[in-house]
Amino acid sequence: MRDHLIIIKVGGKIVEEEVPLRSLLKDFSRIAGGKILVHGGGKSATTLAEKLGIETKIVDGRRITDAETLKVATMVYAGLVNKNVVAGLQAFGNNAIGLTGADLDIIRAAKRPVGAIDYGFVGDINWVNAQALSELLVNGAVPVIAPITHDGKGSLLNTNADTIASELATSLCSRYEVRLIFCFEKAGVLMNEADEKSVVPEIDPVMFEELKAKGIISGGMIPKLENGFNALRRGVSAVVITNAQGISGGLRGTRLVLHI
Image (cartoon, rainbow, N blue to C red):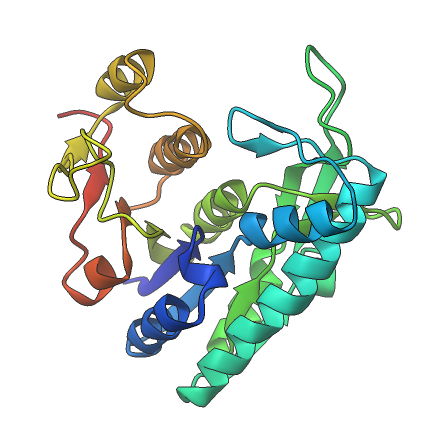
């Protein structure tokens, strides 16, 4: 019987504001067994870029990353945000270790080819070092992974954190029974953005396309659900979209399913 592993991707306001982050890390620290935390930090990167006079461009929830934006992303994601999260987990007794994809060669990616849109220095994941991650988990470490990968040739790449969480989950599901949780400030996918109680309990790919066509699902939520469905198709046991309270309350929120 495989051990359980929970992978939580945290983003939005939670990861960048002290009070909600501390609450999330407290709940995360109580999870027994193997666990990995993947984080974003896009709002902080945008704020720093503005201060430096660097324009931020986002298409369908994905950041266009030119050379200067890559520097900002690396500083914010791999530096400030990652180490704040690691320090917070250490305070709750978790032996956290902060990593990018370049550390231990855990996530190798290739620069996305230029198509209709030139995403710049954005990486599409080719390979995850499941063995190295498993060794960390076996030794009681809690990996905290920033959304920076590398190409194996000395270059860093900006990679969507939802994609990283999904790829980690699918790469490790042959070794563990993996649950993948996307955690942000909302209680789940909302039918009405103004109504926090309008959580959609389950979404399958057909419903996803319908809600996307109506504009109910848009922006950064699109790649989140795309990655979630991809993870389910590749063997991940459960995918849930929720907030910090949903984690501590038995995984309430929106559950992704392949068929309703």
